[in-house]
Length: 197
Image (cartoon, rainbow, N blue to C red; front, side):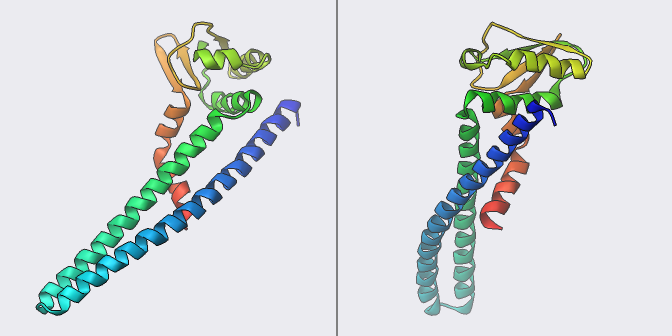
């Protein structure tokens, strides 16, 4: 296993460990918050049930149904909020990685998006400033393994993080936001499973 592979594997291991910590913290927060919401909804349902006892059976059934619907919607809303917070926290965690790990993450992304053509990688001004010395050499090597070439443009673009690959008229958006947006349903499913089983 090469030194780069070891570094990538270590970055991946650390990222997974940090993701588990983030999910655990989010799980604790969500459980507490959901218990409060559940208690509040239960109180509302009980109030509706007391009123329903004085009305016809049909009114009672409608009230219970309304309460259950409110409870499901409240719980769903809290779950969606927790999932969004976990995803945002994961994005921020990646954004704030040390430069070596941050650019190592994007080297992995590059491997799945590089084309066997001559291309240009464009980044934000902030990322250009903190780019490690060996990054350009690494991306050139990655591009060569796919039969292409890749150079880093010194002209910054207005993205928050990540990079955009330009192959002639074709642009491949590999910013962190684009990566998360493209995989949002999968990420929500993963976060939902991790938080709520």
